[in-house]
Image 1 (cartoon, rainbow, N blue to C red):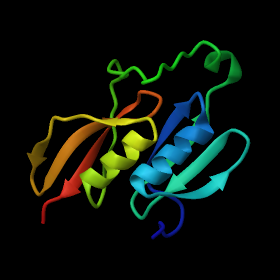
Image 2 (image 1 turned 135 degrees about the vertical axis):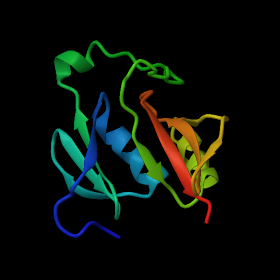
Image 3 (image 1 turned 90 degrees about the vertical axis):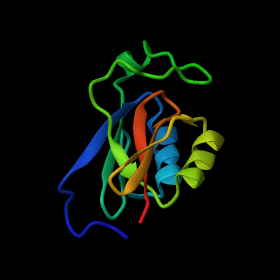
Image 4 (image 1 turned 180 degrees about the vertical axis):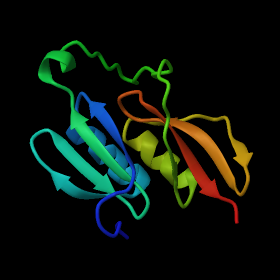
Length: 130
């Protein structure tokens, strides 16, 4: 499923390796490529648009990403995405160099946990309980 018309909301992520990070989100979140050029890849699902933007070369040269990546905990923003099954997203994330953290909790009608992409960006996975 895709969004009808232009996205009403989304998330933009700057990436050291935008091609690889876009592939991570395509597989973990089940998104599809809507647009791609030399600096940007736009992914979408029925409810979310992700824009993966390459860092400028002079900034990317200063960014160090280890293996495994360091969790970036010093940011003020974290997005969430509802997936069909957290367990499936966890398997894909681990296979692609990311991580899903062990702590789980519940909100009204959903289960949730935090996850980290292959560049250390933290996001939340949710699964509907109904």
